[in-house]
Image 1 (cartoon, rainbow, N blue to C red):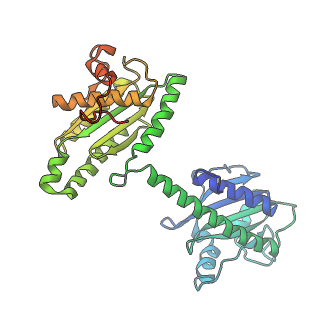
Image 2 (tube, rainbow, N blue to C red; image 1 turned 180 degrees about the vertical axis):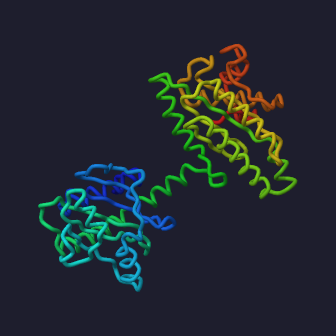
Length: 362
């Protein structure tokens, strides 16, 4: 679980590990969706029966069909005790332990002879359950197996907690706190990956860079809280426009600078969305619209061998749009190809930082 990169990989590792440890033929981990009152199966591993899939999309069970879950979790350990696992068999209910008709029917239907169920408790609350089964004809789980399953459920809970912490850390590392959009670090990583596919497969990669006009005036005249609201509202507009193109990453680069990163859509499709973005930004109650520059490998801008060059091209286009007060996007390469003034500006040597205002981000 510690080596997993995603919550899905983590729960699969837990299910597979527990299945092997208990000698089961099948294992599943389910999460309790409290707001919906149901157990949602996250992963199935081992010998799958007909209709079962490893990562089911819609396999959920109403909790009221499993009253032992609610009663066990709330009545047995609400006072501070620890929940213990239990064993059920496909018999007639004469065995020791709980007897749930739905579980027994499921065991029989899927050719399984017994199961052990262990509640997973996270942060002091019921999180879900661990379920391990053996095929019909195999030895029935014992009380010792159930005790072992209780320990394994605790280990699984610790692993899930660690995965959640790591997932939250990754989210914070790649998310802008104010707008909820991706941040510059996320853009840099995605852009490097996209350009690698561009070099390998010819995928079209496009970058739309935006500079929100009027933010300083809003901050100076109405306060930074109002300025933050403008940033949030524009972030929502950016996200909405980006959603027109599947797989687009919407990001805040910092301050009043934003961008869209696309891989796949044509340069014309990206330019059209950039125009939509300009129109919607102009309708915002606050601010003074947006200056937008576009650079796409689908346009005649010359070879793009690095993320830096694509950023410089989009920056130069945005710089030209801002200088001209344009309400439409400026697209690099569309005014003379590599002879386009935007392309020439992007490819010009950078001025020394101490003598001229830096135009392009590194």
